[in-house]
Length: 412
Ligand SMILES: Cc1ncc(COP(=O)(O)O)c(C=O)c1O
Image 1 (cartoon, protein in one colour):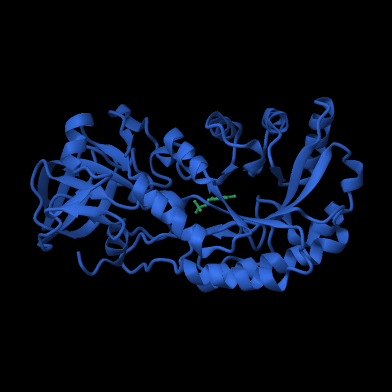
Image 2: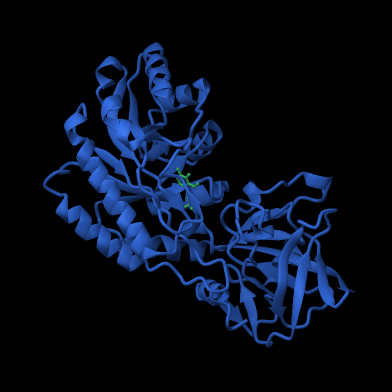
């Protein structure tokens, strides 16, 4: 287990007692005695550490928006609201969740291709900080909707950048994409703004990719984003009051993953913003991130219900699986299937003794959360914990597949 960098990196944020992992001060057994298994447990102490680390690293003029697509649990939304975060939402449903938390609508950005009329209407009625428009059609539609409501809708242009966020798990920029308006077309779209009397121009939103562990790549993409914004200035109907630089901050998932050096990202961004201060005098900057804030705080815990040998390999069958945690099964956009960080949370002091396949109850070989994981010798009833499960876990999984029991979420 020692040689797994991701396990080591994530466990540094948690406490342990007598070789047992504590989640929000409780052992897995204490949690399971109350709610059974399997469960997702979110340790808000860990989320707070991550938020504060990011806040401290970033220049003071940069606000943090929590991308609730990573984890839309209402308690987590309220938690980040209370810490002073803004929000990135991607649907009317997400917008409603954030508004329900009592968040200031002015701190909400709404991005996503294919926004429906009722979604634009809801954004306009709520008077959100920025609808990040993904096409000219959307801008025309938004102008009409705002006009009908007799309101002005705050909009930014979402830019499909001409560059890539190198080394990202998921790339949202560079090349042809469904996201945003191509960088080279932005000047001509800005020139159309005079027609849209019901739209208030706010600025730009540039999200180049996600799950990146390289401070160098992220810093250089931020620099390119700022340069792109400066190149748009002559065409803007007025100076941009807001620029959302995106994020892409990754967390360690796989054996050799090292934690992102967020201090370097912050330092490089500070110097980039200092250089552009004379040009972008009155601009407020935003970064938006989900995974970095909540990924590590969440743990998916199941129990071993059977242990089988098959042709020289050991299989531990758990009472959960891919239907609860698609990402850990490697089927949520991963190109290469690799194990999430997996531990036996009550046996942290024991040395690894065996390689084990961790599988669930579904009738598909895809239902495998771990392949040849090095663990202490497993026993029936042992807890198995998948670390790094706080983002794109519960809400990104096919929960009703095969009609198994649902999984409980608990915030601690
Ligand atoms: C526009 C936008 N913002 C924010 C995010 C959040 O990314 P992450 O959770 O990796 O920080 C995504 C992820 O797909 C996104 O598409």
